[in-house]
Length: 271
Image (cartoon, rainbow, N blue to C red; front, top):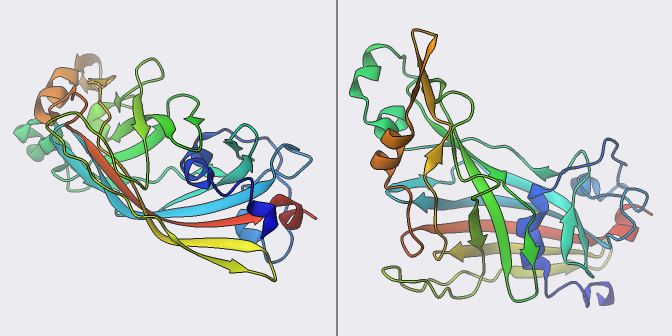
């Protein structure tokens, strides 16, 4: 248990960070009993990593402006922690799984273009959101900031429809404590996970935690383009923004993320 003394405090921040880093071309194989940490860099890949992490975001929601997207499909995060810098890196097997979350209302709800129902089938009318990295996260024991962008996926929108970008990201400050948002939002409180320690494997398991943040702002959509007749591009950014209440100032947005986490010494995962 002493192995975790220096890393226990920042583990919550690291959990959120680990899914957003790029990986190396090669990835080692963890020892038997630690296969779930395959996304953690081995000592050869990153000697600064001392702990391996794997987590599942199993529920919650992400609300920006007037659009609220439930997290219905679990997202897996995996990587390794450098406790000195509080940075989490991932190899080729790790990172954040690019999971599609169905957006209520579909493409018609996003654009307000009712006539699309006459041209698209049921599957084509569906809209999905995928969270992607928009910059390097910064973390400390007290706080964690994660810059992200949300990819909106539907054939009508083209391939580059995003809310947020590298130049103008959505900056999440996630906590299991209590938020201090600007009005009109009121403080909300996350849930610290319960933990268990397996003496045989030295794996710490954290269950039933919840991250929260309702202090972030969200920019307007960009890159949303309908190509008429297959040749004429028509921007849908203004329609997406007006239908979604974007851009949305801080104090009008919210996310909650239910999570479980496993944490193990990298020297045992890669003996």
